[in-house]
Image (cartoon, rainbow, N blue to C red; front, side):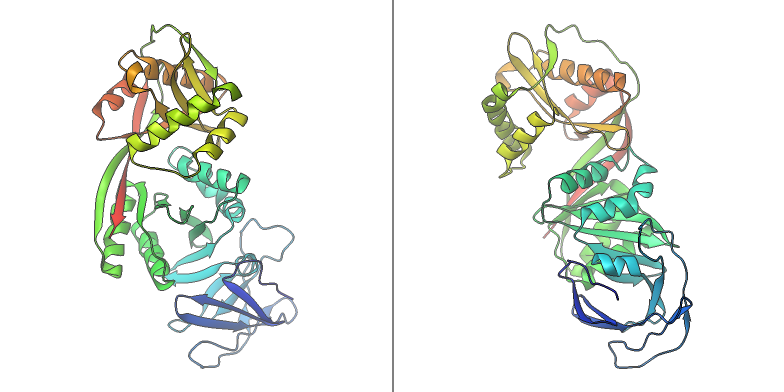
Length: 371
């Protein structure tokens, strides 16, 4: 017997039926295992009945303790689409476009399990998505996740968590982008915006605006850097140290100022600061007192992302942030990790500073707002 899983997207209706909705369409698949050779499929939304012995094919999805079969289903616009049984059991919604399969889940742990090999194939380019998935698995928040597959291989991932945030995309080719746009639009998804690799984001934004009849406005360009050279040593007084519980109130004040400065106000700053201090991710440059801060995220596939670099206004122009990032990068490199960070292309000062201490450009990013 198949179980529909916990997702509200799927409702268990019959020992031989799984019902799930994609957009306004409701699709019912009825099946039973006849030996180990085939499934019959007998119903589609148009009322047309199709049946017969349809061959099973094995899948390479890394799901243990479950048979790796796929069922062949018939939808309102195309028959003989392949849906992994593991996906149905895990609570996925399914869509299809031009040979690309797109599946949906609300479970970040399942995405990590299924897409880990794909994400690990480019650990620098995929670091943002990897670290967000790790964070959502450790500290659950509402979210939506889509995976594009072709020939049983993951070719793209989109995540949106929290649900009020922009969706974040991995780099993917044009066909995968088209399939993703089609799947999300058919499911009635509303997105406030997107963030990702510049080429992928521009392609998605263009197709989304055409499909949804909305404006797509680029409002922030970013650059992904990796620390590849030692760079110029800083001669600032002071030392790098971890933030302590005694620094909490000051860190709350700094992060509020940082959030206002970058225009991304958050309601969970206290929770974030407490987590970063407890997990030893929040670092300070101390010169007879805290002068600057940076967050060194937990390693994801051997890559640490540095973020939240901030110096209070009254302490700026003394090289404290540069010293903090340079020392933190050296510390992480000595621990065996690669270091990356994102910069705002509208801030030439930070871009030149990071280049000077050994960071080199890897990729460009773009954020779009949908109105």
